[in-house]
Structures are given as structure tokens and as C-alpha cells.
Length: 563
Image 1: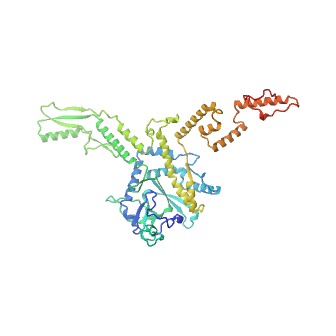
Image 2 (image 1 turned 180 degrees about the vertical axis):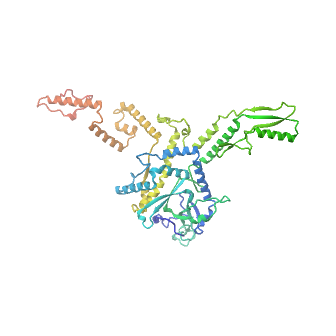
Image 3 (image 1 turned 120 degrees about the horizontal axis):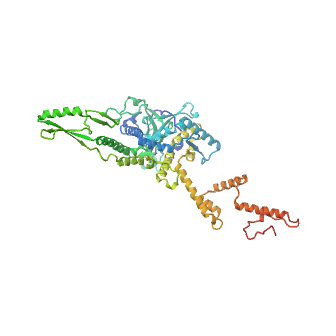
């Protein structure tokens, strides 16, 4: 096999033991295509059934994104997923659960910040996320110094999804890349699974400087421009998909896939609505032309002359939405011209009424709601007069909560892009080894800037309800419930929160930020009076121990400091 362009990280640690055998290859549902090896450019033999489908899908997704309704829905999703702020970055790395030293954490944070600077993510986050959302995938070439790989990634270059494809090349049995296994306990047995020879897999990316174009026959053919194709090593390209895969065709789908049918239906309804209104809105006339006793040919000629003199043809262009005067085509808006023989009522002009139900938009609104539902956007955001209310969270629609969870899932999927690039950067710079990364990767999280007001209203309403329950249970504290029970069961405070709040309350009381309660003030007054009375007694009388004084309402407390 020819040398792949780029670099590869040693993954020998991933090789299974000789006893771990399976003829089924790993399937990550990443939309990779399988090919049998047949020369360096053998993978291009099946572009008719592979690249054509994916090429058409991506082109269709991008055309859909230009439609006003779809663009509005995409913008709603982007505004929730990527929050732009002047001071804070849209995404930060979270290493709280990572069990490594602080020096390693500082190095990881520094490399993550370097990756964001290479992507210019703080400024281009909206565009990057939109490209990933619309296409359903995104590619970046990790440019490094091949002579000095320890310096890490030098540049991240965006690759158009139409110009690159992820491929798993399946080698034939007995080849150089075939998976060999040593014989088991019974080497002579032909059905020994340890004596099997399974096909090996080689994963790489195929990049063409020119996107795949259709020829005159409507298919993708191998032309001279495909000879410039380059095979990229798997680790040299950062690859992130939407996670949606067509299992029948093994093709990565976009989140816009469900909206294809709804958008086409909406387009047809809108075009037909415009044509119907243009044809039915005006009042058409019927011209009865008196032709007298003219022969049939003469009568028809006379009628055409009259029509050409007074007729005005208007046609509607569905592609541009323009109305133009075109006499070459028949129009539904033209008037009717009918001949009338002598003996009739002579020339007459009558009027046909226009359409009476032109104001009905029920069908258009239905398909608009259907389009928004297919994009997982709440229908309430489609209304023109929709307002954001800061009322009770119980009044918030369930669709908004579903939408929030949907955006959270997309954020988590999109963070795989940073995860892949960060892995390569840390391994190249010898911060971690590939084995260490496998154990650390699950504990590295990514925190997106949060700006969902509906979730804030939900938390505020929950806190309000809890405080209301505490106020209701206050007379029963000390009688039926303890303070610790109220804090744990009603306020839902954890052990760490309890300790933290107690510490803060004590510090704020000492600083005078929290004023003492009425009971505490009464108790302090009683203690002060007892101290003053104790000073006026003779030296023979014993001193009063302040620590033994209880609250005034207790039955055993002496009054006036008398013993």
C-alpha cells in the first residue's frame, strides 16, 4: 500500500490479545464506506453508489438552509447552542473530575486554549457550528511539522465536506494487513477460531481538490481531476459527525434530513397559493363579439384581431417570483373571447367574480408548524406576536424543555471535535501517552456558555416552592422535624453544601452582614442583665456561670440572677 499523507499515532496498545477473536469489524456509525482493495485508486470504482448519494445530500442540505423558514429555525438553534458574550468564551474545558496533578491540568487548559485560538472559535463559533449542523459533519486537517512532530499542531484547516470522504479499506485474506492469530489448543482442527485468518482494515480519508461532479449522463465518473486525490491518514484529520446514520445506506445524515419532505411540501403549497391568488384575485371578463354573417374562417380571423388588440397576458415565474407580460404562453388570467352570430344580443362584456376564499392560510400554517416540528424547534417560536414572558415556570411549554435537552445533546456531540484535536495535541507534545489518554478522556468535559432563560425560570420557581414549604413547616421545627431534616429533604442540600453554608453563615454573622434574630437578641439581653446583676453582689456570693444559663422560656431558669 502507498504511504498515507499526514501522520499516524501508534495504537499498538489497542491490538487485542490472540484469544480475542471476532470476524465482525468495529462499527462506530461514522458513515465510513467499505471497499475491497484493488490498487491505489481502486476505491473510486464504486463512486456511483457512494459519493453520488452523499454529494447530493450535502448539496440539498445547503440549499435547504437558504430557505427563510429553515434559516429562522437554524438561527434559533444556534442562538441556544452558541452563546456569544463579550467577556466569556462560548466553550471552556472542565477538568474537575480528572484525577491528575495540577501541573498536568494547567498544561491541558493551555493546549485547549491554543486549539481555540487556531480555530478562532471565540469569533467564528457561530459559523463553525452552523457548518457542522447543516452538513451533518465537519473536517479539519491537522497541519504539523513532519520533521518536528513534537511541536504539535501548527494549523487547523477547514476541509469542505464535498471534497473528502472517510473510507475503511478491507484487505483480502492472507494479505499484509490481515489479522493473523496463532493456533489454539487444537491446531489441527479446521474450525478452531484461533486459527482463523480475518480480513484486515485500513482506515483513511480520501481528499480531492475538486468536488465530485456529475457528468452529462447524470452520474459521477472517474475523470482526470480525481487523479489528484490524496489519501490522508486517519489521525491527520479531525472528524466530527452529527451522530445520525442511515443504517440501510451507511450514510451520515444531517439534522435537516427530517425536514426535507416538509420543506418541499411547504414550497409547493406556497407556489400554488401564489398562482391561485394571481389567477383568481382579478375579475375576469367575458367578451361576446358579434361576427354577423361572416363565414367561419373570417369570423375566427376577426375574433383573433380583436383579441390581439385588447388582450394583456400576464404570467407568473415560480423561480423568481416575478410577474411579466408574456404572449407566448397561455395564462389563467386572460379573458374569455366568444363569438356571437347575428340574431343574438350583439357585442356584450360580462364579468366573472374573483376568488372568495383568498384569505385562508390554514394549510400554509399547518406545513410551517410541521417544518418547525421536524427541526425540533418549538412551534411557539414561529408566531410573529410571540413574546418572552418572565412569569411562572409552570406556564413554560414542555416543548421548550425538550428543545433545551435537544440543544444539550448537540453540544455534547459537537464537543467531539475539540476532543479529537486535543487528543492529538497532547500526544504529539508528550503531555500524555495514548494509554493515559484512554483512561483520562472519559473525565474531560466541555462546558458551553449557558443562556437559556427558561431553565433559569424553572430553577427560580423550584427554589420559590421549596422556600414556601420551609415557611409552612417552620412551626413544626423542633417538635416534629429537625433543622437538618428540613435542609436535606426540602431544600435538597448535600453534605458539602451544608458545611459550606454553615461556614459562610458563621463568617457573615461575625462580620455583621447577617443581623441576629429576635430570639438571639433576647438571649443576649438576658445574659447582659445577669452579668450586670452579678457584678453588684458581694464577693462572698458565687459568680454566675454564663454557660449554664438557658433560654428564658425554659422552666428551670432562675430569675434576677438569684441562686
